[in-house]
Amino acid sequence: MSRALTVLMPFHTPFYAPLAAGVALGHFREAGLDVTAVPAARFGKATMPALLDGDIQISLGGLMRSFELADRGGPIVAHFAEVCSRNGFFLLSREPRPGFRWADLAGRTVLSFHEAPTPWQCMLTVLRAHGVDPTAVRIERHRPTPEAVAAFRAGQGDFLEQPQPVVEQLLAEGAGHLVASMGEATGPVPFTSYMTTPEFLRREPDTVRRFTRAVYRTQRWLAGHDAATIAKVIAPAFADTEPTILERAVARYLGQGTWSRDPLLRREGYDYLERILISGGLIRRGQRYEDLVDTALARDVMAEDGARAG
Image (cartoon, rainbow, N blue to C red; front, side, top):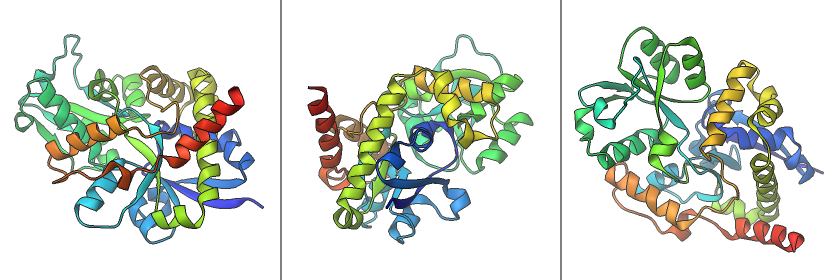
């Protein structure tokens, strides 16, 4: 009998194509799991509260959430499988800027992403890396995505930072001009991973192991297919997005190596994200890698695959 699992996504985007693909391809089902992927807004509760309250057992989420919770003295939430190894956001300009430099943001307004702080924190790091004082840039984060996009279309702000498919939609309309991939600008970072509570890991280790095995299977599939094929597979989960827009979004993500090729959340990426969050003032201190990341299951399923290949 299949184990039913509701897996939350922080928001609905092809950035999380690995989850949609795993469901559509039947990888979770073949692992004995009946996985339903639900955006947090539709579920009615954010990912971390839903996990801690026991409403769900596994969620997609940023490692930042666990850093922030632990920094406040809260409970530990473990990340056991990396999903996105790049920042999935893009910077659009109202006007074409063929010679764009990060210094162009000084004295201007960026309508940034409201729903999570990691894109903003990465932006601060990128600005400092290019010699730009973040305080010289007006970064507005108070508008939810629909309002930020509407404001940008209406002429407010000089730049807009959003994920897909909003970016491709605005580019297709001519309402914005791509000046930077934040994934390329930030560099490799464990942006999104699957997380669960230590209690669930102890209670149902086989469930999480089978889940991780399916995740790795999907990661290998994604690495071996082109954007058109991936977009076609995940299209049922994005019925509200034009097929051409979806394919362009997937191609953009695929081209910059957004999706992890294996589930292991490595120490160097963890340390980099920790530095980003401390320098950005989101957290006061670091946390032990071993406390926030469980690598045992990822290593096990990768070793299984290696043994089969051998």
